[in-house]
Image (cartoon, rainbow over all chains, first blue to last red; front, side):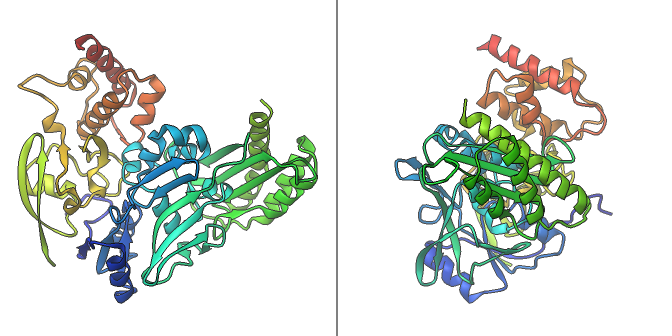
Length: 297
Length: 159
């Protein structure tokens, strides 16, 4: 008799190709039965639960730069094999992209973040992904290697449904890249879970703002919402409203109403849809106010 | 399914093991190397009973494939004491009565040791954050947290 909540992993073959091209070709040849492996923190759980039945896991953690983390004048590039703990520990990330470090800190536990990666979190395409909001508002772009070589795609538009994205057979996301952030920018991530630490989010709300002379209000804000729609999403109408109207409590309130109207949550084990909508309104206001305080400090 | 021949260091000892692809580090430690101090609680990366250090980092050994540990340096609870002298976190857990059933203790000890290695003077919040992934269902957390605080002081005094 087993007392484990989860059984052992089913049979599969672990594959470690020598190059990215070899990996892409293998994945393309075995479409539907092979999957790229980064940290495995989602893959192993789904395989143990019998939801995924891959014959091959293709380890892409140490291929052609996927283990690299670079933060310099060209921006920030985080390879597919870079763990969240490594992102958090990098002083240049904490200084220049604190929102990203904050989002990583909210994921599960320290020992799980030793394995978990941002690229894996993105490819898993969970509507609740904790780092996705930060990557969206910071304008992340994915570097993808396929059987025809490299291409770069914006993160917005990458998610097509729960657990679904636009990747094709043979595609491997090798890194996510962020341009240098606008001067004097600031952001806030608020995660509402059933407990303070380590749980999945009921609502995840990310706000990011910066001065911009081309906006009528003098500022632009980005707002990303998680766990409240089939995919993580940006609140475009709220963002456009804030570009046109001066930042203050009234405009933050109206933007929060627009954000709440834009989401389409479901009832599930963590929350009712109604509660989620109400909390999007409250947390959007709160995140915008906190971001504004940081911007005007 | 193919076997993979891997070499690694476990608690300072060189090891060679043949492992199937789907074998986790946890299974390898317990079933191949008879290091049963590391416990299997949830097998899903949630409870922390299986926590070990791989190359100095605390990790859930149920969420690592054994084959991924080629060349790695693994430390389990059996590797904490040196020459018969308990690690300060082990001694502090005893001093504070931070053990009842003991099932979570190996993982707690490894998480605490990894914390003190990267942050020798942690605040109480730092300790709580480091132990978020280690669930205890009988002792409670207060004595464990106090033990890690004492271990930090003891370690500082020794250094």
